[in-house]
Length: 197
Ligand SMILES: CC(C)=CCC/C(C)=C/CC/C(C)=C/CC/C(C)=C/COP(=O)(O)OP(=O)(O)O
Image 1: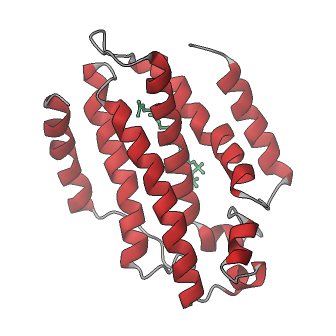
Image 2 (image 1 turned 90 degrees about the vertical axis):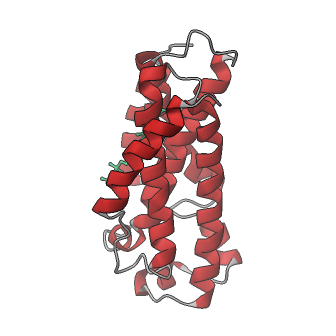
Image 3 (image 1 turned 180 degrees about the vertical axis):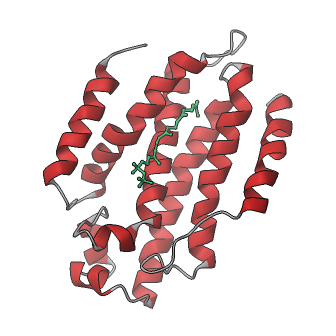
């Protein structure tokens, strides 16, 4: 399944980001996330290797890797809404914003309202689905790669918890995972990866 296409697609994503600063639908946003992050997941699988004794298909492992790239990028976007808006960028599906009763102006104003909280809950829930999808693939990676990938997945996913803990204020507060939590994730991931599925 190794292919040069993800490398070309990543360059396409960088080019896209030079002129595009709005996403009308989640499909459009997903494509951007694939270009700039899903591709990274696909590139890393041949480097890390699939476990020789894994019964899973290579496709399913690549799918999980793709999902982790998407989950990470969606999380990165949700963390950086304020920062991005101050550069005139909105990496959120505009149709879903409208459905939630929100406009571009609301993003630039940056006020945490109940509408915003409701919108954010949906976005966070979707990002978590991609993390769940990714987690299923971790145990099929070569054993040396399992725990670092699992640790990175858990660390990045905790940023979503931090956004919730900030009461969805991702306009002026940066969601981050504290040093202690980060540190604890390492032995936890090591132990989990050492156990069979
Ligand atoms: C789960 C399985 C089977 C394999 C793992 C496959 C991997 C390692 C996937 C992860 C891919 C990855 C690290 C994608 C990067 C996503 C990301 C958060 C990019 C953020 O980049 P920027 O947008 O430049 O960050 P800043 O906004 O912080 O500058």
